[in-house]
Length: 543
Image 1 (tube, helix red, strand yellow):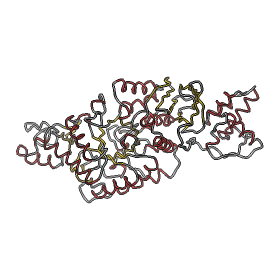
Image 2: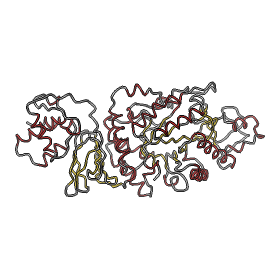
Image 3: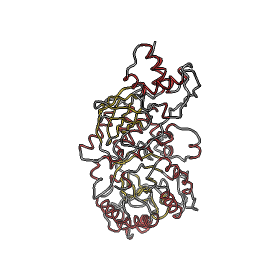
Image 4: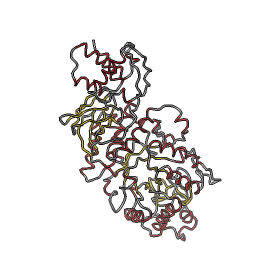
């Protein structure tokens, strides 16, 4: 089992994060990469085991117009800075994957400069595709050439030229020997020559154990790229789209059917690189119509088959929108980590919790997938023996999940539930979700996530002992939400809006008792509901 099969990834666009100038003046080196050490420590706390960072090498502007493949962009520092940075990541248990731009170069790359200067006499004219000296371009070169995306700033390499192939392969060997990197993300892999990618895979198999190749593929049948002779993984743009629109449209069928279609076509979704945003698309917090979808979206990111990735800053719930003129500056911003960490942030808490769960529960990386419940607003599935359920509705719901009998523990919210007769009854709050782990198998314990609004401190009261006993009894002797946190005295005499979760649970049991006998199932239902807003609505519904 390779390291990347169980890794939670983090994605950094360094020119943006470090606040580098938009254009390269090719002046003195600015050692901005050194400023990322605190981010490495932040990633370790999140549970990240793989960092995809780039582009890093010398370029004229955004990094994808490479002008020197063997020198760190001077806006970020020196090659020694990159060597030290990778070493520091390794010391913190994080593998490093670089952005590799092999499809095209910038116009200041040595081969293209020679072509401009010497024209037909240049030994590098066959390094580029379809150079035509009978044409011209907007730069007045007196010739034309193929490019990427219609941009002549990005001159397309002729990857069928053995000299270009040799140059790129030697560049990879240089990156491994000089910087000790662990893999590559291939830019524009959906337009790269397939024989070139096969040659890269042959090199990857020898250059370093478990050297990983992941390709940027936006459209197409992924198995064309992911196979033993080519790439290990590709970007899952189909799931990316389904994750946000499936919530905005209250349509979990879109997400489930995307996954089912892949599997029917023989794709192992566990090899796909999953993400909810990146340096080319708007931030997930911006795309969600209801920001409460943050939790179920990220539960699915970490629990559906795939290799989960978080784009820098999105764990803090920052916004970012593409400018009307096409600028990506807002989705590639400079950020101050200390400032972001200085205040409580429920988005960060959720990503941190999911990162820890993903690291401990290997079934979320390797477990087989089985769909268990699917409606437009509720979705439950199994990964190995782990149960996952989400709700995109704006109100409470109950889900009956078919599963093996036994006691399950809530990894996100705490508490225990018992499955009987092949079914587990789970109550979820609005825009909520849970990850349920068999108590008999797992010894890992996770800190339950808190509500977005801190609960007020509870006060001592005469009914503390009976209320606590009632909440305990409601779980059938199991752990309640109250026991998942430090014990607090209960006071059922204050207004409901000021009550904690456990106080609301106890108050509901009292109300139920006034209306008639309280059954074991009623007690379990109360104990299973650990969402404050839901409990508040429930207790107020009594007459």
